[in-house]
Image (cartoon, rainbow, N blue to C red; front, side):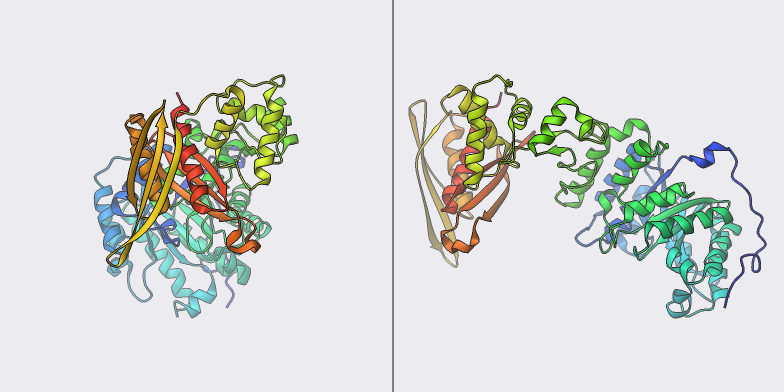
Length: 541
């Protein structure tokens, strides 16, 4: 069955007003981290988590926060109950649900009733665009599906709600039957929907198709047009931008791209693209420099390790390694940077490795607090030593603490704050489990200390023994904790005789630093990194 857009519904096109404001519209940011994002593998927010993220998003300046599906689970019921008591300054809270069920009036559908009872100013509902879903999933007729859309929107508008209509599978549905897809969107608009959002639910549409179909929809609809994309083929952000360039002015996505399968459109990429590249207003300009903070905050709440390769906000987004690149950045930063990293709250980083040149060392040394220039005689020796150690398996990109110690010793030749005279690690059985015990001997200004400590493993025991021995000389070490521990076997073809590289991350609650150790003995490599971690903290002012 084919549907002509002028057949089922009378349609009067209302051209947007405002001249150039339509060509360059302000873009609404609709965040669905708490609903669509929570459906991603490994993401599990508590009620308190959702409330904290909602408050952060509101402060950041997004326009809509989708809280979840009322009634789908006790957690979402509790979230909406608590969210009702909060005052949001910038964002409107949205409850999410579906159109009414087939064969039942909207006012008698329990799911629709719960959307009203959530008491949010905005309700977002999804409906079917694709005849495949209408016939094979809903098991209903095309006419009934259109009635389900219009009835539900009309009922929500009668209750004074701002209604966002998500056209599920908009692009697949349009490619299957353009007339019917348009009829579903027009049904929502005629019933009063404030936003018609085109959804690439399967995430498999090319950007050229998104642009063409969005442009067609823009020419046939007067309501604000939205775009909701997924990242199944790696085009989530690109497709959202294609939609915005083709007439959409409302974009949906999640912080850090959380979502089902490979994730949703990442709004931490979309927002700076809209604001800094497309030159369109979205969130307050004062919020853009807080973008990296927002990204890291949500990762922390989700208990997800931050992706260093995230565009714009990742720790490697403005990291430079090749000697020629670093030399150019030193002279003119924009020669290898598309924006100043500070504009999104990020920082420039210079990496030091066997690819490093003199410029890398100079810039990195200054970053670490050393006063070096091209005439400093020690620079050549530092560079040679770094390349020698990297050839032996060391890696300084994530071990800036060890690098700082190397530069410091080359520059001043100063004594270390303590000396490690010896250590011993043993294991004993304690019932059904094993207990590791470490003994260390250290000296501070000639004063010896000898300590024994137990741990869950040899590295944990050594860490405890070292800090216990040194804390009475350096109380600041009581705040230092090992926060991450990574082991990599180098040249694994050598089997158990292979060199082992250990990377350790430490923190004192205010800052973090990495250190590295390499040895054919994993305990020795770990101890090198542990000693560097402690020595680095003690040499910092």
